Image (cartoon, rainbow, N blue to C red; front, side, top):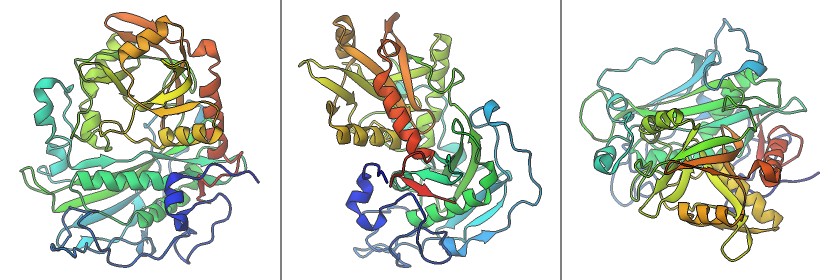
Length: 445
């Protein structure tokens, strides 16, 4: 049996190492093997600044919800399942959802899987006022944007139906870790990451028939945590709602699963800044990008390439981390991606590509700054081989053009195969769809 590369999180915590294949776990928690978690989590002064802590140097948080307490009242009427070949990203939803309520007064309520329904929120709910702001960030509104990023965070992950009929999640603990970090930054309540993952697995298990019978489609999982404090004012919420919805999806871009896309790069807009929340998956980071994204489309491009600083550093694309495969300034064959310096989202696919490339050991792998000047010079000197994006939604997506300073920069990705981008895509999808055994894949059923 072949084994995929060891996940960094598993290497740091061997007891959490996940393997494809039959899971052996404690009874009643859907087969997830892990250490027992105490009912009260100590040391929250470093893990959870949100409401629920009692204060002092020996802070404790309100007991987390538990998957074994899950209330299951699933839908009794069912929608027709869509044809996987005609799926449009994020427009169709399954029959059920997971909800978990939290309040400062009583902590987490029991998790509940129930029929998908609209949310009922007080019109003063904090997430409705202090989360999404539909402007492009500019130098003039950076300060105000600091307050507009709070109270709404989300994650994005997928369930895949393998060639063997089994359903798998891909490195889901990396998503849980990132969601917990985002909650901390947004002053939303902390939670037991393993218990949430257990609940998500059960929801996917309930919705098994919604996982597409296709290796070109999947079931998108959207965990969301919002502040629902029923009062005005920028402050820590005393009420919150964690919910998870599911959506069967095909390719993210209308152009197809592996067709190249074009990017628009204009330094007048900023996605994130030092000391901000660019490394968290908060709603405001995305809502505030819509204006620039609309302008990119008007310019004939599909996504925004976000730049930063006076030297126009390349950071990331609207829905993807970015990779450049080239001969660097020293003539070395190198795969480079911008570093995690607080303005880059630490993507699960990004980390997986870095892990694979380092495991292969065939070329230099760097997390380094790349400016538009570096890129244009390399293009002039024919040193660029491939450029591609990576993310949960698209997996790997080749890039063929960047519109920068009213000039179309041709990226020769497709002329070069693209050999490396294709290799990463094949490796990742082989793991996700069960063609290759790997401890990056967690079985649901």
